[in-house]
Image 1: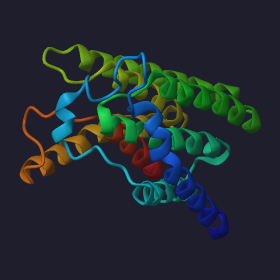
Image 2: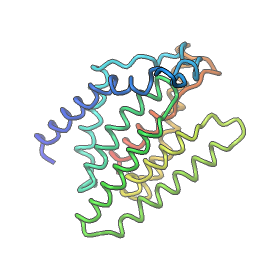
Image 3: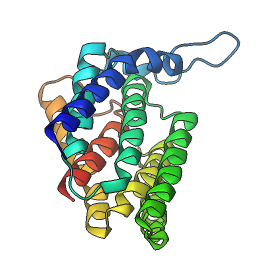
Length: 226
């Protein structure tokens, strides 16, 4: 990929990130005549360091995410799929950090973008059989995370399970090693984040922490390492 295209993708990612806090506000604010979306359902987050996402910070993250995908090997015709999922992933991460929610409309939009995009990519490559990998990846991801969520004392929510299944689609496109890496890395990243926050006394042992950002970051890193 040319340097010019990589720069263009980074700029596109910065633009997507810059509008993410504004879009996230539509999913994290209380609406009249409806149940409160954040504060009333997750009161402990008021003491967690995740309630404010600034446009410059999100723009920087978006630039890194899109720019990284631009130079990731093996994406080929599926690059637009990864970019679309990444854009929605930025929004999901901010919402999850703000109020421990992964809204179904956003997860569903990511699933639709992934499926439509991968079908198109398979058609462009002339390899419809490549769709078996994404479907198997989604099924394995869903099954694995659903079993984890059902374990006694598990803090894994079914929003995380559904997001893991969606991320299994593009990761499955890249092959089994990438899929397995994408399943393991989120737990490593989440564990390191928890240890760091505990050491810094930013959270307590009983503080509820979101897994969605780690799922998304792990999938992104797995794609870069493919």
